[in-house]
Length: 211
Image 1 (cartoon, rainbow, N blue to C red):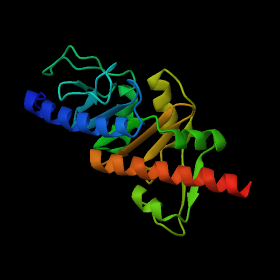
Image 2: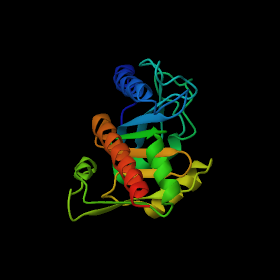
Image 3: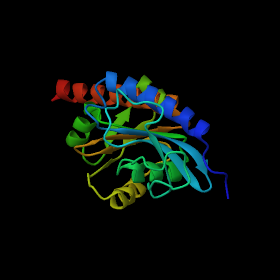
Image 4: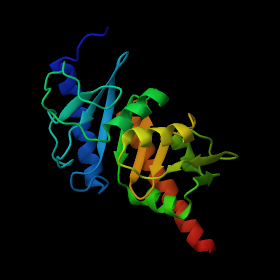
C-alpha cells in the first residue's frame, strides 16, 4: 500500500492546478465555476488531486484541491478531507487509469463543442501542422477526435469513453458540454488543449468556406 498523500505534496499539486485554472479562466474556457483539472499523485492505488467543486476557477488557491480515488470519490486519508470534488472527478479517474495520464484538463472551450455538433460521429482532422501538438504527424495522418453524448452519470460517461478511446488521440469531446484532454503533465495537457482549439476552429472555418 502506498503512503498517504502529505500536506506538502497536496499543496504543490494545488498550486499547479490553481495556476493552470487561472490561465484557462483567462482564456474564457472555465467560465463561472465550470470545468476542472486534475493531476495523478499515485497509480497503485490510483489517487488524483482534483480542483474542488463550486469555486471560481480564476480565483483558486493551493488549498482548493481534493484527493480522489479511482471512482472519483474523496478519500478520507488526506490533509483536507472536508473538501468536495466535482462530480466529474469520476471521469478524470477513468481517463487517468485508461490512458495512463499524468494530468487531465476538462474545460468548456467552444470550438470543439461546435465541431462535435457538426460532426457527431467524430471530428476528422488531417494534414495540419498543429496535429504535432497532439503527438501526431503533420502530414499523411488522419486523426479522429472522438465525440460522446453528454450525461450526468460519470460511470455511464466513462463507459462511453472506454468505447471510443484511442491511445494515439489524447482528447475526448462531450457533446454540448466540453472537452477532456490529457497528457504526461499539466503543461502538456494544456498545450494539447490549445492545439485542439486551433484545429477545431480551423476545421469549422474550412467547412464553412467550402459549403
